[in-house]
Image 1 (tube, each protein chain N blue to C red):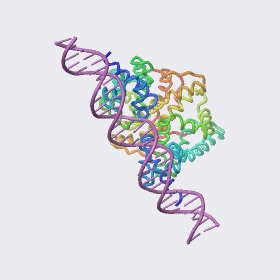
Image 2 (tube, rainbow over the protein chains, first blue to last red):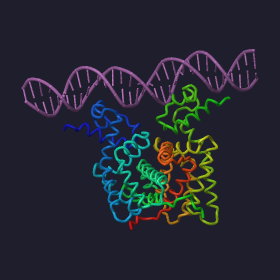
Image 3 (tube, helix red, strand yellow):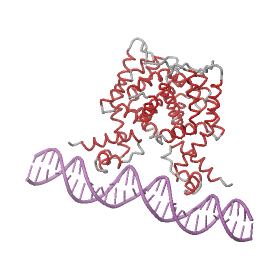
Image 4 (cartoon, helix red, strand yellow):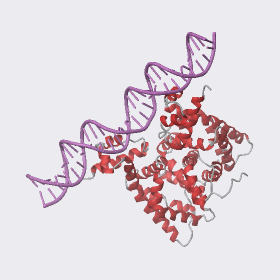
Length: 214
Length: 214
DNA sequence: CAGCATTTAAAACACATGTTTGAAATCTAC
DNA sequence: GTAGATTTCAAACATGTGTTTTAAATGCTG
């Protein structure tokens, strides 16, 4: 096996990053868990930062084309989709991540959350640079589904959505434990996705303007 | 002035924590910015962890009683509130944080976000231990406003809400810059709160059950 | 199998971190 | 004003970090 070491590092790093965040996961922790030499990380990846990017890239490169495809369908459709249909079309790409690796969906979302909070702006820049077209298609589709929503309001609501997903997933392990012990309901990632989707749809589709208090 | 040093540390630490997160803010950075000696942090607070707690406690101790009061009003009211009214009653306590310090509202929300993501579980435990009653009142009020929502669904939706707020505020500085440059709309914390409230209300109030796709 | 490139290995490096120490300075109270 | 407690200060300590170095081991190729 030629690339065994590189892959062991990648898989172990991914798991530890998701569990503990990037800064709290040292290279020594990764290499000891992966049972490889410390220096091999810098040999194969160059630096820790590049290792982080490699871990994230593996998922983004698989995820984004699927999203792009789903959005293209909505754009090509003769009739405008509604928000429920738009957001529902994220479920399949997300769950597809489970094919990359066991618990891949959870990992991906966890890493996404870590990447957005830990590193300031790097991940965001990487995504916009490499997948800007897909993001733009998504915006167009949402605009078709809710034309009254102004660009700036959409900007904010989509970031609210991102925050909801990322925070939920970043703390999903702990939260799912609490939910299981307090309510006796064992929640896996898939059912959690189907719990959050209605929330997101309603949020993005909320009426525009200040709250009506009566 | 006896407590000048302690307060200088507290104020400087708060600002830097909010800007850069807890782990990325070293004691040396704090003490140099505060123009105090390095050892004074450990002298006055014991450890970095206790400094973090002190910074957060100052806000929570001011914020939570205000929330408690607002929730009590809803509980004492003869008629059940609606969700809009419930969430709108958070605006005043939040904006009240601006009286503790300049940009106090933004700081508080930023620190809350940092605390929830950086330290795993500590902040959550602190809140439930010290302000469990208030949290419970909040749950009761939401239940009055949306009785059909099961406890477990409420659990999740309230955490979705927490995630929305925390993520938005944790990246609000960067996001507000982007929004300002891309859409020419300058957004302060107050107007951001009024942007997010409709999203949260709609999300929590979303219909129960799977998405209806047609 | 010999020779060369690739990969692994152990050790050291350079640096940043939180913390502790002990003396000097400052404040407080009698 | 002076004795005693409190606070500040500079320095060192112990530890953990990412990275680099140099040699050994391994794999591949002719």
